[in-house]
Length: 68
Image (cartoon, helix red, strand yellow):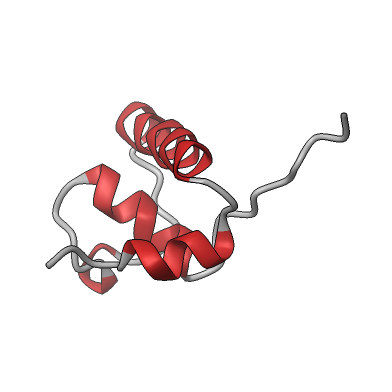
């Protein structure tokens, strides 16, 4: 089973597409800068994509919606 659950994440982000976009952007940022918002030992995931999802679940990433 994946951690964190997609059901929990979809309560934070409106759509699966936005979830993928936010997580992939943050994951690439982690790879380029090696900057993590939590201690490495606090993450459950070993890969940056999973770590980005964990940061989103913990409220460390804020999703701002653009006005139309």
